[in-house]
Length: 357
View 1: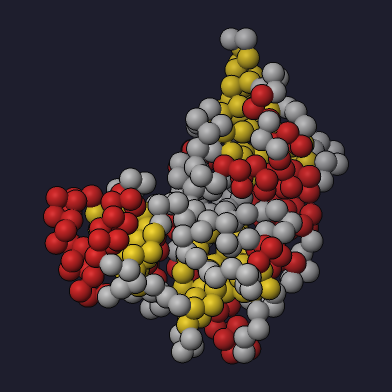
View 2: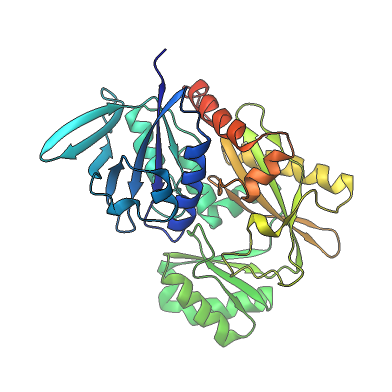
């Protein structure tokens, strides 16, 4: 029986490049080679797409793009080909693909851009589509959808590029409405790059300007002193939610500006919370997943305040997929080994390719 051709796309121009490489290496190792033929496509930090035929260890340590056997490659948007076109020595080769695993995070990667290309190609792929990927990447859209579905988030405001000429007055108005401290972040960013905590008007204005250097929209949120809880959602028509974990490190205070805080190393699972709170988190995670049109998988972050209020923080449509990543550790609580989880994602992507959400 012919093996299923699975293309794994990794890298990208976003700050999460290294996280993507680490996840991709472990995913590739978990794909059963007796059933799947893996085709590796890497995207460099400068945005070049390369077919990579080398060793998976070179992906993990970032040396993959130095392989002399790499060749220029791209996914054909023409559904006639349903595959990857490589260019080597002026000659093109078409490699048919049955399913794509786009292990991409951040802007121009996990924000719907690559998903749109895959939709044009007609190739099934793991994870959410264009709209859900874009809406979860854009924090202002996540807030708006959650507001519409009565899912609580932190109090927030939006500043757009059109308001830059009146930035002083805009910031003053927001500060008077929300009070300090405030979290200021680019609306579109997969990591916490460009995110700041502002405790004074001067810090607030500086934080907004910094956030504008990364995006054309800035989200301002009320700083929440809270426990940081995590849930993993898996599925399509009837998604399931994992037990809830908590990001904890006794030697480090949670800092929303620190990209490296939310790692599996800091995860305690199950979280030490009452059962009714866990059920509410699981129900809310699935409700948010459906409201945003997500599919396949997502990591959903929550805040639990000192007075017991539950707030949704954000949704990641392509979370880290190392064995020790938060998403994978949570799914292990549902008895998914890493190998089983990766195969499940690939199989369900093919099974649900013709569904619209």
